[in-house]
Image (cartoon, rainbow over all chains, first blue to last red; front, side):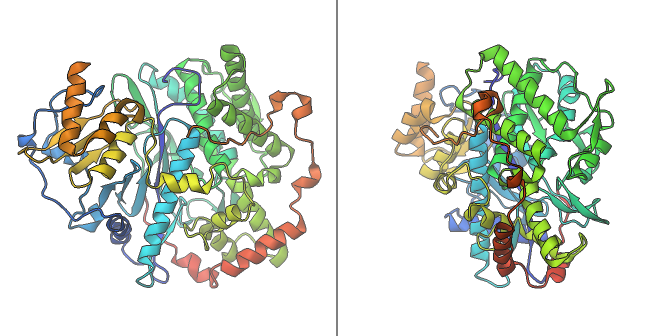
Length: 518
Length: 62
């Protein structure tokens, strides 16, 4: 999949949710986030902590067919990489669980975070991202039984100086030089907010200037490239922790996106980015679209909902953010035409058609894209209030609409009400999202992880992106199955073995037999 | 995900016949439509907006 000219690749979305207790702004967010994770986990039957294990006692490894073989190299210091599959620690702020859909639900500092399972298409990324919304909603509903409860928000700032992330992950070809990624991806990240921004009332990290801007996150970025994620945030994050075969894959960890509610914008965020990465892998952009002063331009584009702000390229051309995003589209389209003469896989075709349609709408009149683009949908409502009630941009009611837009509750969350009443385009049927709360994607290792948790909950003691650890009867030591290749451990490759096993012992024996035969 | 229905918008590369008709009127959110939305939101919006906004304080994250 890596290197092919398609929108499909291994990807996922991780979202930190805003958290608050009604009427108590000083409630401890770390403890509250722990409550969110543990209440959901307990409702799913995930049990209290089990004994931790000793890596000195690590068993010779059993490997699944196609999985990497070899003795685990883990040291106690690497225990932080293992998520307690069925563990709930004494300290709730360390709560960290794996779900049957293959996702990770945990406390990331002061926010509950849902990291989706690995998927292979933008459509699946949207599906399992929205499953995360339902999981957070279920936690809120449980906590509401003890007033005042806890509310969660799928947004990225409080408008008072704090920001928390929605990160995307994409695996790409390790052979691609990172300098090329920086050169050719930065300009795209400056302008993709024209489609992907979720809209924000207030300008500046503390909203000191009244107004409306395209993206929640843009004001929080200070440098072009760097390793940080919480300070001096960079447009291109250099974290290189592939959780996969490191000489084959690089994980591009994108920290500049907003949390989306609109399916089309979310699909395009993942799809456009994946296609640009494919062109970069093939060195098809060749440094021809490099933006001057990317950080200040990022903010200038975000601050202009009329979409007139100009972006200057290093070749001296000046064009609007929308025009530059259109140029990226046209280059991708021409490239696909050259390579495939228009014969596209369904996922790629879907992304290209929406990309084109939304650009056309934004070019005619940005308000036309209110069914597809979050910032436009939110702006239409805010302008309605401004017109009806004669409100200035500094009015707290507008800021309340902005925050409540992302409330995870179906009846209170304005984005959810807009979707439920048909005001925004829905690409993924609700039933499919509900299924993804419990079911893993079938075409990545997330299937193995999630299905093992569902079938053998008493015997999975831990898991991580690239391993599942079993406690099996008759073995003095834990058995660790490494899964360094994200495209193995799929239902197609190990479904018969996993679904046919009566116990974890049975499963490990069958995997070992399959391994020795292959 | 096999067999799912995928919504297919018209693309601008599909030829002139398939282009969405330019509809400048559609750009204006109709007064009725927005009124309906506002009425609905009025019913669920936090009643004390100022206090709600002041109380929404987050610690930083990634």
